[in-house]
Image (cartoon, rainbow, N blue to C red; front, side, top):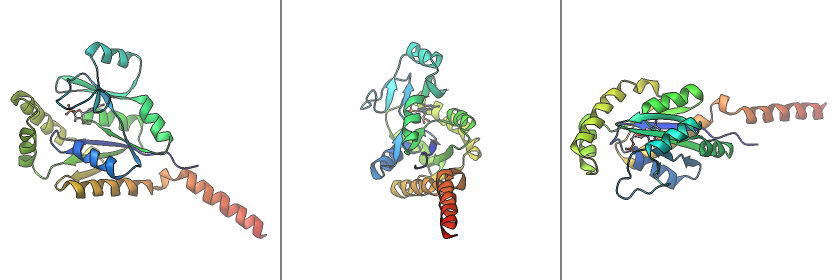
Length: 211
Ligand code: 5GP
């Protein structure tokens, strides 16, 4: 039997490029599954229900909370975002590493519930580049950008609670680094219980056979 997948949480400032990074990682490797969150915010141009997010009304979202359908949920800049349980659980069972691209409050809730979660924080190389990316995107109004920058200041205070800080300068290098970090994580002994038991049993069988 193979080991279960790793639950990987990726957070980062709005404008850190983590969305593009996740797409690249998923295109390049088939060992990952990306969880699709529910949100009360409206779709941006080009976004589709069930692909980027499950878009919900506030009432629908509250109903999901009451039914215990979320692993975690949080409010971010006037909207709710939450991770549905079922998909994450089933993908981990099949051995996939499941990536949750979520903000900090949610990330810390997940870590508390599942201490073996790997927490990664993505940042652009500098604050100036962050601001440039956020304004260059052209999908947000000025007020939202101001709110998101204020949120970035708050989130910067919690970076040390993450296991790794990944600097997103060149996208491809960053994706390769993230993959390497996750792959190394698979080698941790506490994630290798099945293999360790198999080796132990094999050794016992072998020595008994040799007697
Ligand atoms: P956006 O509106 O730009 O798509 O996302 C805003 C923020 O919400 C991002 O930091 C994103 O990572 C976070 N987010 C997306 N889905 C979830 C979720 O299911 N739970 C939490 N806690 N945050 C989420």
